[in-house]
Image (cartoon, rainbow, N blue to C red; front, side):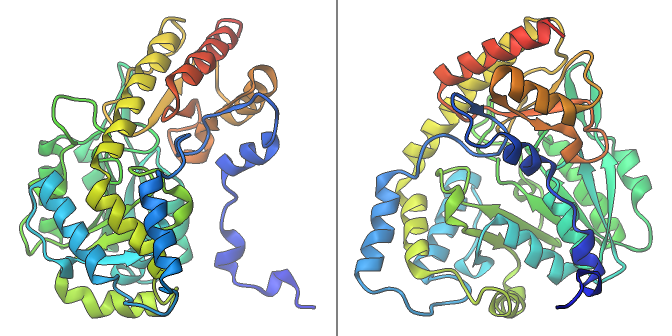
Length: 389
């Protein structure tokens, strides 16, 4: 038997998920309210599932277009026209097996071993781990937390860039912090990338989960020119309650089409056609369902954040976007141990801030895309726990 020590050092060094560690500790406990992972409590709506079932029953189980079936690429173009006012052709879109694969293929396309990739932290841990697996060097730039809110320090971001830097990863609205870049932030970041010849990987999966006056968060699409080097990565998971479907997309210049087709070919060889039929229906008929998810998230955000703020021991304000309250609780220094303790004493599952890299250690993440009545119960349990710390 081959010794594990003889396997790839990069694969051996891939970190265990600090989120999954807590999930595995408490999975299956009766009465537990799971706020630890980034998904809601609604199953995929029937009109999406029915489209996939009809495709299966019609025999659409063969190899298919590796870039995505034409109706899905057209539906993506229509979605961006409707929600972002963007004029993009179907040739800008590449369908992949999840947002995670979109990130992985984007990294394979843009960076080489030894290149540096700069990202803002606290951050969803998968990007940095995926970058390291490609042989790139991830460099974290901490967001600033003050007055219960997060801000990007553009001078700090620029200072982190070296001649080895090839890509900036920008996730806004942010998982886990809820930080939402302003249009001015995005223009400044794009200007920096232009000046230094860098690619940007824009993760705007939560763009429509925005709680300000505008219907969506600012996007790089609002400030970019056609020649700008930006790869957008996204997923069907959050908008349409399709986390288990594992289907996402990349938005990239049409001239990269053959490159991405090749990368898809040598990884998954494409996404199942019946899955793509469900995705078409999500885009074309799912705006009302998406809005119901956004409304639920807004209501539950307010319930959770207001209740915890009332303890006078939580600094975090209501986030501007995304699905998470990233809670800084007085007295918490080891969020991993606290997450375990909260599970044991309250039956509420939170993700420890230690899972989200530099700057995250004293925080706890709670996903609030759940039934407001359950969020009220969770908020009551957590408030009692916090007051007794």
